[in-house]
Structures are given as structure tokens and as C-alpha cells.
Length: 262
Image (cartoon, rainbow, N blue to C red; front, side, top):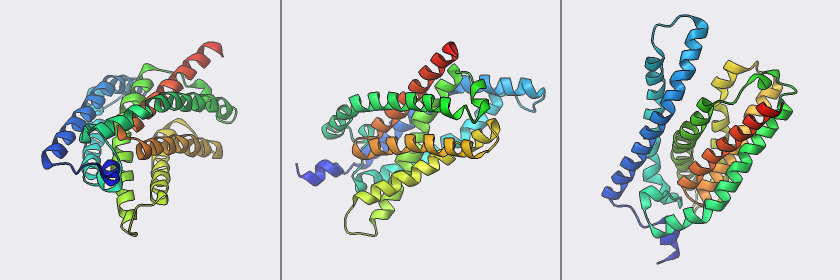
């Protein structure tokens, strides 16, 4: 097989493309359903604090998950038409020996570095807690773990890495005769910033936006976005998803340990 065919993969047939879309769509729906009970619990707590709500927690949860469902499916459509054109890989779409080998080659790095990333973020919050007192009041919860693993790991990676990053690389590549490393690095960086800013609404609810809150928001999420983007570029979409999931497992472990010790 020619090197270009290895790098870019054999073009998907129409049937393969839509089969892959179906499998990923099921993954998206399954992830949202796994996250749904945790979201309902969180919303019930918020409703109990306010004492009034026009809708039930279940109704709010269904409404709040509709938007990410639609956005993830749109991202899936964009990504599936561009990812092979820019030399990226997604095992479930391709189901090729080469894509599978890339994923297997990434496993040890993804598991270890993803876990280390999460531990590093958890420990970094110890530093930031000196300037952001609210961090000391945040207790680890199963809800936050489920949100990170399923919503963050699957939904955000499909929307931002597979959808947005792939599309940016494709349009950057149109300006030159061949793909260059800077196309990937620029797209990874742009999407990492978007990923960080995507956490702004939740941050606004939890903290006063002092400079250290902005630094934490951009630095910690930006580093995570750069790492998952790199794993998608060098390996597969599934590598990025697994890295994101492991980061949240590492964060939860550190938060749980600190809650017991401190």
C-alpha cells in the first residue's frame, strides 16, 4: 500500500461513511444518557436552593442536552467529510488495520499522560486555591466525574476536535499545495482556546472573575485542549476521547484524596 494511502486512508464508501456516522451518533446518545442522571441530580439541587421552578429537573435536563446533541451531530457530519482529506484518523469510521494500529500504539501514552494531566490539574488547583477561596469549598462528586467522562470525553471531543479542528485544518490546507505542521498546530491552538472559553459560563456561575480565575480557566483547559488535539492529530479521534476521559479520572482521584487529607 502506498504511503499516502496509509496516511490518508482508503476513501470511505458512502455506506461506510453513514455506518460510521450511525455508530458515533449512538455513542453520542449513549454518553448523554449516561450523563443524564447526574445532570438531573445537579439541577434538582439548584431548584431546591432557589425554591421555585417552572419546569422539573428532568425537563430542564432534557432541554439542556438537546443543544449539545444537535451540535455534536453537526460536528460529526463536518468531520466525516474532511478528516481523511487532512490525514486524520477515526477508528470507528475507517475500521482499517492501520487506524486500529495507530490507536493501539497510542494506548499506553494516552492512559498514562491523560491520567497525569488530570492529576496535574487537580494539584494545580491547590496553588490556585490560595487566590480563589471558592476552590476549597468544591467537593468531588460522582456527578462531576460522569459529566467529565461522558460529556467532556465524548461530546466535547466530537464537537471540538473531530468537528471544529478537522474543519479548520481543511480550510487552512486550501491555502497551500500540501499540508504542513503549522496547519495542525494552529488548528489545535485555536480549538484549545475555544475549548477553554467554553468553560466560561460554568466558571461565571462559580467564581468572581478575578485575574487568577481567568488564568486558571485558560491555562488548565488550554493545556488539556492542546494535549487531546495532539493525540487526535498523531493518532486517532478515539485516542483523544480516551485521553480526555482519563484526565477527568485523574482529577477526581486527586480531589477525592485532598478532600480526605485536608
